[in-house]
Image 1 (cartoon, rainbow, N blue to C red):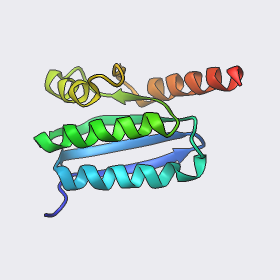
Image 2 (cartoon, rainbow, N blue to C red; image 1 turned 90 degrees about the vertical axis):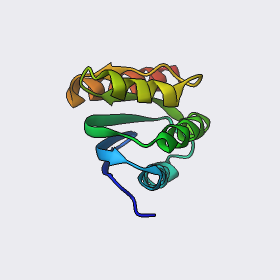
Image 3 (cartoon, rainbow, N blue to C red; image 1 turned 60 degrees about the vertical axis):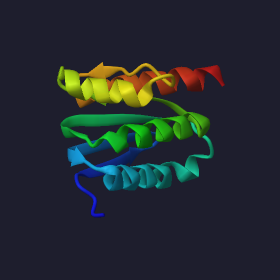
Image 4 (tube, rainbow, N blue to C red; image 1 turned 60 degrees about the horizontal axis):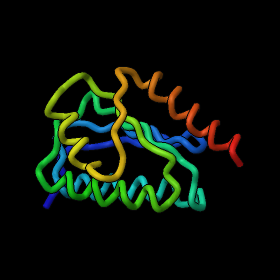
Length: 131
């Protein structure tokens, strides 16, 4: 089946900025997961942080939540220091994120990418200070 939706990933050191667009199906979710794994492959277990800008995302098919739940579990096991989401206060979108993180991490939402990046930098700086 053809992927529906799209994404962009920018890496800035230990921070990935992931911008997601349109409605996703399972194929797009799997492409996204593969691209993130490739982007962090050289970080040798982290720490790394993911900022997900969802301002132009339109939810995903039911299979997407399970794929993303597995991906978040993989991320935790492979050095992810966390992830935050840039999203408008949209109840259905936030519910889908919360559902995909159930039992793994409590999602944090920001209204701007700048605020989310500032948070990511603070978390990573705190972790660097503990080493």
